[in-house]
Length: 177
Image (cartoon, rainbow, N blue to C red; front, side, top):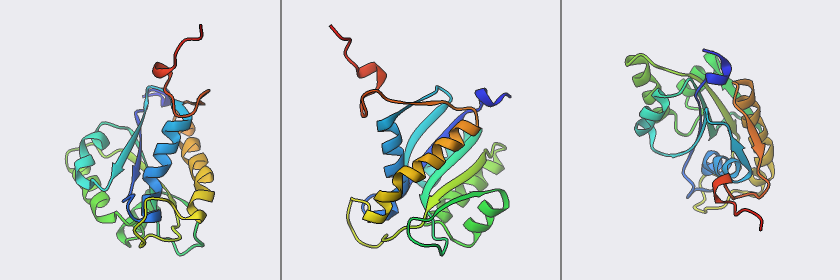
């Protein structure tokens, strides 16, 4: 399979009701608002669905998870976790959704299609306060976080272009008179 044929799933996870817990979901929303992606890339709000995400995960070749990650760094620090680091971080509960994601990946292994996976995560400033807005720290680092995700998409053979009109899909644009 060539890179351009790789099915890439970009999955933003987290609970948007608890400030920076929703970092991953908010990043996917912004990428959808600002960019058009190639047909081999799927952007998905995974919320806190856990094992119910098994079907989309089984149907991709590369899983890019965007999440809040507790890595003992300064708030706003960005992490890229793969391979042994991914497994180790999940085993040591560095991700706030570790149980569901671990269970889902184990089930994908059992049925014979565990995709390559990478977590692009950010150290949260506040994930305990009930609020739908990101903290100022996370909001200020969101563009950098999205840059890392777009780089992962590109490295895997996906394409993206900035939308001429943010928030409007190509199909929704009215032709000029």
